[in-house]
Image (cartoon, rainbow, N blue to C red; front, top):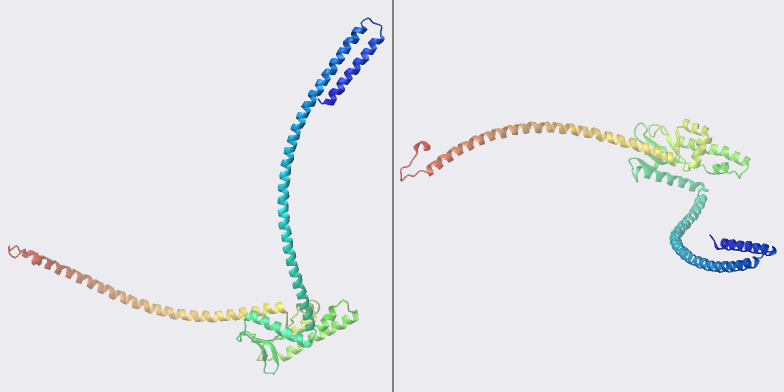
Length: 365
């Protein structure tokens, strides 16, 4: 029960007693004085008890408050310790995260610098490709790089670059493919000027339409030149390759210019990009390797047959030697028996006592 509730109850009792006293006083009675005196003493006792109770309750409340305060302080210290521990852990994690963020930002900064350098290189490449002669050199370098990566550097048995044909035309490269393909000529072509205008959406429809037509004419001219210059009956393969060093241009032709693909097919010219050329050359290389493997297989088979003949001779000779060894072994065994008998006789003779005439003639004989 709380202190406030007890005080309220005592005040209620005091009020009730005062009301009774007042009511008693109003009634004419001889015992009023006695009742007043008794009520006065009761009030004094109540007041005294109330004071004692208040003091006792105050002490108890103080003790309870001190205990509660100690417990609360202990809990607060415990919570503070846990909070500090969590804060330290979170600070450490935050510090690690911050360090990782700094490292990532450093890498991003490096990547940004590389991107800027690459952008500069791209602009330089764009400037280079605007010149027709530079584009031709770029295509030849790209073609030579692919040939080296697939066939190896300076592999004259498989390919050559800047190869002069019997008609005096020089192909960017030729591949000495196995039969029935024979020698395949590859020439690099880069129809870029009209392609750029054709795909540039900032240009007007008229300009793009004219570029579209010019692009078809340029590609057809390249196909005609390759078919005329690099397909020679009896010397080269019946087909040649046109290498387009830009994947985008190659994709444009195959996606939106099917008539050019069919035209190249009729002219026996293969249209290739860096990716498709690598795949084609890899297949040719595998054909080379299979042919070489077949050659070595026949040689190995022939040598194995020869080895089998020699092994048969070896077995015959070994059998003869084995029989000779068995014969010699039997002679050796007979010779050993004879030597043992002779040895025994010599032993018997050496044991004879001549002075005592102790001679066993039967053993000697």
